[in-house]
Picture 1: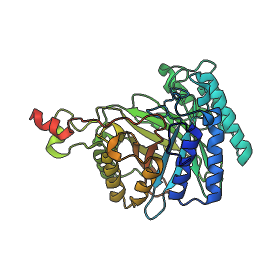
Picture 2 (picture 1 turned 180 degrees about the vertical axis):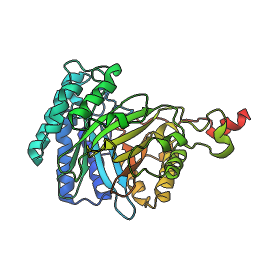
Picture 3 (picture 1 turned 120 degrees about the horizontal axis):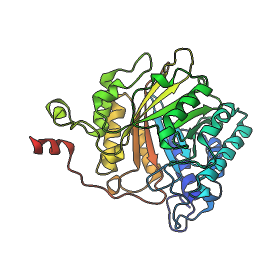
Picture 4 (picture 1 turned 135 degrees about the vertical axis):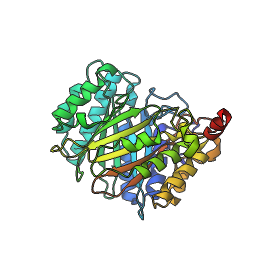
Length: 380
């Protein structure tokens, strides 16, 4: 089975086929590839054996078509991209968020036993994010940064709205305080929601606690003003990234009735904390949901290439990665490229991350919006 067939194929077959080909793009060895595909199958649990002809096992928020797997590639100048896979380990529980969270915890603890890392940080905040009757769109996701040697970096994503959206800020503040970041909450910029709270577990040089914020209607100037890390990223590069990905006008058109703002799915920012002395973040990531601002994935790919090249990164691996995940022509759908992100972390080179959907269950058809600049010109 080639991993692309969806007739009688199983979800695990498709996902591991995609991951195998992506591991080759990322330069991982055959042994590492085999290890990581095995981990993915284990993380999916019973869902790995579910036929793709059936509906998705849950209405997971992880992807638009409810695939419980997403891939991403982190690009750096002059290097092969780093590969990551995001999975919802409790997806076999259907839409029972409480059981979903319990299954996710079991998966994380199994990984901790296998690779010998501590879950103390997660244990300290478990009750905040995994209550008996959770609310919101998710319980627990796990991301694996697939490193040479067969031992990944593990990241856990949690839902700040688990006790209600009106208590999300309170939940984030308390979680940061329990993890030793008592001053961190007050350093965050204003936002209109807290979609995710994340932790690095296991072998990381500087494990991060990450807070994600939602920014509807964001403009390039605002995107450039949101970092709180020191030293601050350059505003000009952030604004250029934001305009490129969102296809937002500059100059005279940008001033016309807010034409330079994202009007669809909102941008997200991530503020990562690694030290407790100052209360300030050491990292900032700007995430733009490019799939909402293109007609099809051919356009999304063009914007990704433009961003990679403007940051001194080779785009050839991107084309290989897209072909590894799906054989369809890019113009035949939208959403294969889900997000583009510009990432800053103190002491590390700037990177660009491209998020790639598995599309296990559905390909969204292309759309035909009126281009932003044409909308602006029509009002002048």
